Image 1 (cartoon, rainbow, N blue to C red):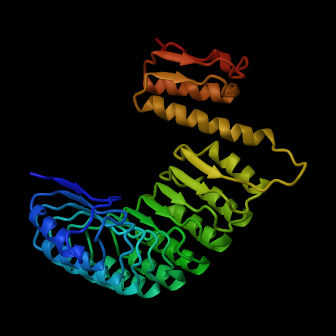
Image 2: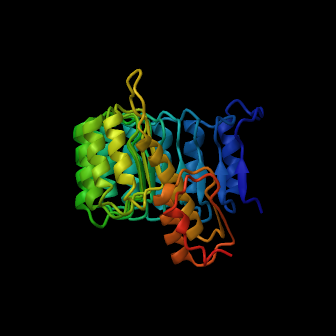
Image 3: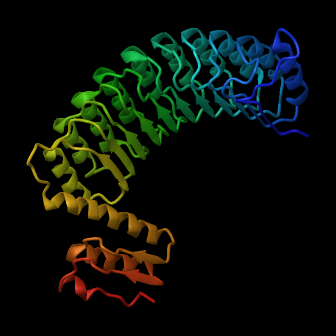
Length: 380
């Protein structure tokens, strides 16, 4: 029995003037046993009319778990048809509608379906045309939906009202784990509401949050920092290209002194200078959980970067290597990492905690007399 059907990037000729019934009939016969159907990238005949016919066949289906309809130029009619189907479908877990032309009407239909659907885990809506009206209806749905885990609205013009409405939903939602509002026209006021929501909702399950390429500025960054001081769930935060300067960067860095859960922070392509970088360099010597910091800084012509910034990079290499060893890797290779005596002491502490290492390489690590007194009794 066929379990998966893919029909994307083909050039098959239709058997009639209207190809939709042909594909619909074929899929109707197969859909009973298939787990995944991929109709990505404009296979022949896939349009709003076809999707409407397909949705009728899908409504009562109990085996389909993944449906990919991305890159098809689908509009609101197709989205409304799919929405109607998932109200009665109890097997679909993943729906990909990326890179289509779905607007507020289609989003309103999907939101209505999410009020009653309790099986869909992942909804991908990259680069559609959803605005504030659709986001408001989605917000209402997220307050009652308890199944959705991943939601991507990347590249939709939600604006401050749409993003603000989603912030209201995050006040109550306790199941969403991954949320992308990348490139959604989010300003500092909406970012403030989002930060407040994630700070107040102590039951939030959100692990990954993307706000990259918006306009949150220092005001929004300060609210994100305030959220990080108390939030104990978020592990990844994307804030690249957001017009964040040193004022926001300093607050974010200070928040990392108390936050014990964030593992990745992206601040690429902002307006942070050497002052902001220096603060991160200081904080990262104490923070033991952040494993990836992506940051760019504006450096004036003829200005030099202090050795402190090189130390920041080396501490991250050291932290990543130690974490790898603690996670079960039996060898620790720190060749050419400028550990110095302070880093060598950290390695000694690792050996005390982790037991036996099969190999330890400390060549060219700039270790002096103090660090040379490492306790290597646990190295086999």
